[in-house]
Image (cartoon, rainbow, N blue to C red; front, side, top):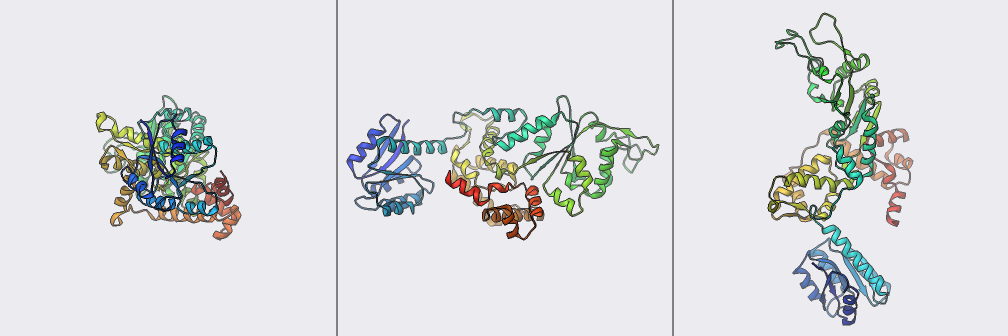
Length: 471
């Protein structure tokens, strides 16, 4: 099947030149001799042209006027502008339209013009491929991570996987730090050595009751309290010789933290209600997970520093999804595969790569968990079998309609505000010191907060922006 391009050009000789230069390639050149004809042809096939080549001088309209009209119809359309004139005003007029992929001067060599057209077509095909219908093969890096139960492509996640391999057989406790929905529990499961079990302790359950922590962890003897009709061994007995995972560790009260610290120091415990003084020795590998706020909690006196040192002898910091957007496509592929699993092929629904590009621009404050929910919703709601960029726009509009945004906790709101302020300061500064001064904080406090929020300052400073522009 040939890829279509639209050539809005009144010069028969240049039309023949374009057709000649592309005759060895699977490209169909649709020609419009006037701006009006070009707009009409485009309206009849809005998403069907890989690129639109627009001449500046047309019999009825300026090329820039045609391009502006087409951009209103489809803002993401790529253009190649052309002219026989080399005066700056022609180029500037086109530049002000935006969306220009390249400029073709008609007196340039054929090979150069062909390369620019084919480059634009290649980009279109890449953006418009459909996830699941493309020739996808996981990279070696992705395959390695899949074996650990992780879906990612980014180098930072590859580094995390390398650390998982090193920490997996280590006896030292591991603390996994990351925002909600970043996949901390998946990493915890990947840290479990072969033939070992993972015993999960959900710390938020014990916020209201320290006694519940003791009874569930340590177990209890019959008659220890009302309702204790028989002995209960507790989770620690299950964790002996295996892996104990303390999820949302930062949620524990200071009193509960103190009891946990004592357990980790002595590696002995006594069941609730056992007054015989018999202590049970315990041996397990400890893995814990917490949000980045845990470091601020130490400064505020809400978390015991000794306990952090005990549980965080080895640490894994998981960056938020917005800082590793290259992971979005493999995640979408996984979510899509799960959605289509068990359905007949004619009922499969898939996501276009250009939609993934739009997803990558979203902040995803809920990280992978929020992305998963959004993709499932779009796959369910889409009328056809392809989720296109407008479907994501409709999803966002629907999600935010009537102020029905998910209500963030005060902690999350403060974190988001701090992150936005810090990133704004960095983007307008040449050094971290300059950014710290703008925010009115000391260099040490600024560096500490960068670490807590998982922000890599070097990615946002003015020098980094300049490098990006040059590239």
